[in-house]
Image (tube, rainbow, N blue to C red; front, side):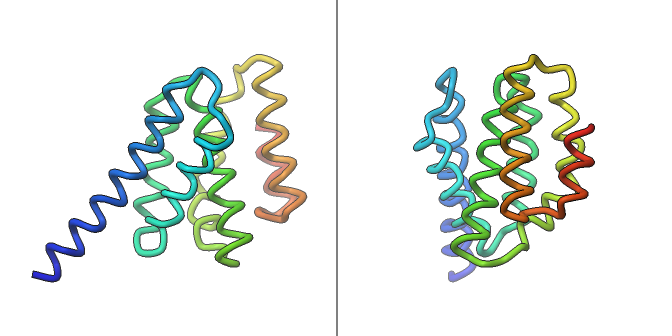
Length: 142
């Protein structure tokens, strides 16, 4: 029936997101195109299943250890950019906001290069007003 079709369509979108995430993880330093492909898959899925997208990307942080965390942060950044520019909404940003501090704390023991990359992402979020500036400053100190 229609429910099964909807469920199959949803599964395929989640599978597409998982496939795109696994492609990002295959390379030592992910290409911008792979990050953007993962972000596009996440945004498509988010139209109906925003919480699932946030949960999946938060899990992705946890699954991939130090190497994957920076890639995960790039993907979250690309998702939030796409949401802001194309959808003109803050729904995903609001869902991520409460969870980002814990994710960003994972970078605390990182090397200088990693910290520089994190600060660049935070800088973009402050400049684009993806999150309130005081919140971004608080994360930067974490």
